[in-house]
Image (cartoon, rainbow, N blue to C red; front, side, top):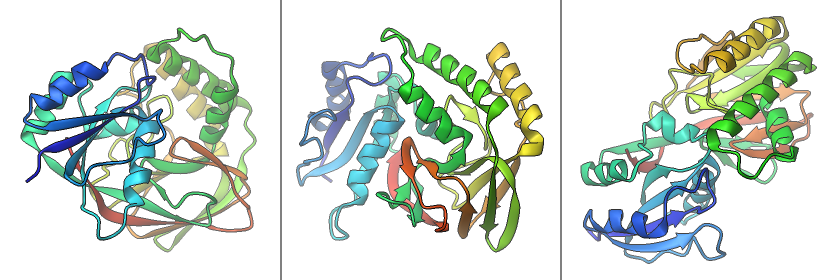
Length: 302
């Protein structure tokens, strides 16, 4: 087997700890030849035919960017294996998989070659995108993403400070957000209520490392649907406050409903703004959003 790696690096991700030379030396020490590309350049996705391993050094947005490129490959193209070096702010996808953030951990990942088949969510009636890797949803999280993008934050803000700021902002939003009516069909069972949040999740955590679905596993063929009703608003605000005050993201139970999905999810809602992974998208509320699980679509080593 060819041992050529294509390293895709977002040099602006997170706190910018990982340098090009260190990354390449680590990969070469594992017996691979290596080609480097910054995801800030136009031709970053141009790979040599002998490439077998794609290494993504960046955050959740960079991972989605790369997956979008790989999923667009033709059916007869060689299937590539992906490894992650989390270097962003939240790193929700990498944390679910247990991908280590240090270079030594990347070296172990490549050497052990523990292959995982990753599920993908296929979307219908969502403009400009056909899939999600982490999750999609409406309500509180799209509102949070929008306000964080528009906020005037200090350039020297660390990843931890940004997560703390986002958590504080989410508390403010949750306290005043107007719930929207939604009807969700999950594997043929209907759920209808006024919801503050509806999230279809392939991973454990979203946003500022909120573990909405602690048992989620992107390799098990199951999505988890998180439903937060208007009646649970006060309990959710209290949960967020305790989370922010304690700094613990493991022991507190999230006060919402979780439903497993193995086939299809159909969402009809009054929300116009949704998120797909970290992207914000305007949708037509008259059209139902359909989600189907595509099992084992991507090969990853962890």
